[in-house]
Amino acid sequence: YQRRVHGILRDAVTDTSLHFLAKMKIMVVKDIERADIEFICKSIGCLPISSIDCFSPSKFGTADRAEELTTSSGKIVKITGVKGPVKAASVILHGATKLLVDESERSLHDALCVVRCLVKSPFVVRGGGAPEMEVAVSLRKWAQTLGGVDSVCVRAYAEALEVIPEMLALNAGLDPVAICTQLRAQHHAGSKYAGIDVRKGSIVAESNVQVPLLVLTSMIRHATETVAMILRIDDILITR
Image (cartoon, rainbow, N blue to C red; front, side):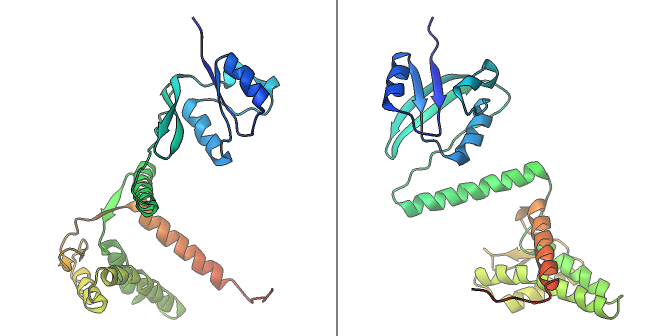
């Protein structure tokens, strides 16, 4: 019985060391990007080491098979049968042009971000501008009970939220003024799930689009923090 050993190195190694490692049937994967080290360690359950003196079984990862495969874009190292509680997978995208691959990567990244949001916060809300308009209508009603500067600030916050459905209608080729007016009227009438259906080009009573709640809460929180930071600026120094 002979155990096959594999090593993953970030920095380059000499040809002499590679020769002796190959004679001992140790496959070496070199020139790994620093950003990939953490992902590889989490995937196969190993720990990075900086010296040969730090080698110990507790820092090794275990897998059933590691092999080098040749694809149309180059060579890749495929690791399967990883032992441990961590489950990881790699997705290889192919396309006729670089533009197509970049677009596929962006779409896959967006889908993974949606899954990540649902894992962190397993709640969804109606889309199509429905939550933004409902919050804006509620803020306008609340602003009527206030006075002075507070009322102006709350109304301005409501107007900022209405920009979202306005931009949604504009990107769909619809009349943003007419669409937002109809949407605001329906929410004032109590249809809190009413949203924009870009396929029909009109307002529907219940939007079929669902959006992770974490996306909306993060958007509102970050926008509010940005505005608060800008308002705290007393002066600007122009530098070269």
